[in-house]
Image 1 (tube, rainbow, N blue to C red):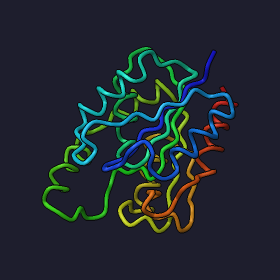
Image 2: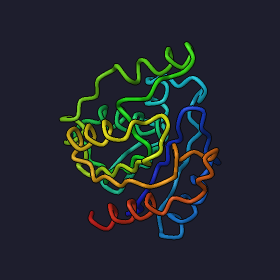
Image 3: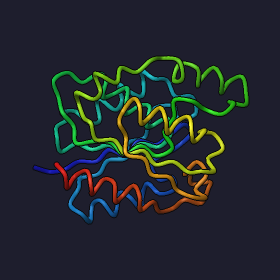
Length: 193
């Protein structure tokens, strides 16, 4: 059975950004089929549009299906998992994930971000789909408050936590072109299945 990985970019992101091409190539060399979809209207992400798009791209998820998300892409993955009934997936690696964000700057950012922050996620439902979560944070992320988000991801998703140094928000603009912790996390999840 082919193991598939879906890499979901973040707000204002795109499939060729930063470390995504590197991770895709590395995973393909390890025998995975890898998809990095362009999410709809990345400058103004909407929950339903992003979750519906991911649903179409994944088609039939199974225990050989894995996810890697960046920032709002992590939220998209969690909200997608919440829609699955009686399915299992292999797990998810969440890079710069958040429930709490540092101050959004503009009025437009606040309007776009508000539903993502305020719409609850049913973790009991998600944990029935998979219990395999790895969250990768950077101690100097300017938008993801470390202590609060680490605590929430441990409590809500029983996540394994990895804390990197000097990676900012893990964006291409932060100069993060490779992310071995994400690669190793996917390989570890797939090995355990």
